[in-house]
Image (cartoon, rainbow, N blue to C red; front, side, top):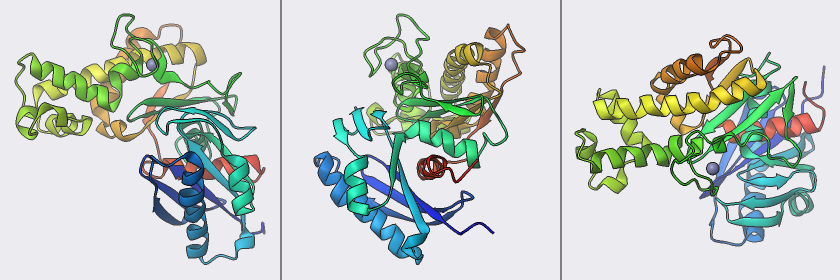
Length: 325
Ligand SMILES: [Zn+2]
């Protein structure tokens, strides 16, 4: 029998850090949350947020600490994962922050870091909707749209770890300005805040909708508001989802044409709208993808919801240490 070992997966969010001990088979043993102050300098966040979260999850696990063999962490942004440096994270406002070395020193365990959606892709590959597939693409739709590509059974990072930034595929040449500086990115039209923006703009033009009565002022409208209104068959909300699905289908068609994946795995908070976006997405893909069968690629929801970050980080450590295949 293989020796029982565990790893710790860390998910660094805007206001708190989640750390979870994982069994080698991908099951969570225990999980803790620890508040962070995102305004603190990165070294303080590492020392006062991440290190105590890991110490706490190990202590509360009740496990002999020798059974914990490594730590993984997903970070929003661009990284040099070999050097263990976060090059740029617009969300965290980090530039050139060493992450791996300080954590290894403080915790005395090997630490591996990777872009958060790329590591979530590993979570789906080993423990989720990517199991048994050699070619698939994950996308996470939330505040932004991130992605991860698996081809020939391996996660593709590209020349400088930029492969998978699929939210920044241009789908409307003169479309709205994106956070990245380009115009008309898929993210600038179909991420959570942009779904909300499109709903707000329609209401400002005078379109009728129950969404008007669901919030005190239009600024409060979120993708969640649009989802709730769609559940009540509100015609504007249903149209916003339909258009969102078509925007996503347009972007995904290019990915399918370039990579011929077996599956597109869709996660993130916005994906919880389910068939409201999946159905128009599939229709748009069928319309656009002609070189292979338009319905060859399965469009499926991600297995992991709120645990996507920690599960991916755990899969990253297990893969790096050669403990999983
Ligand atoms: Zn962009």
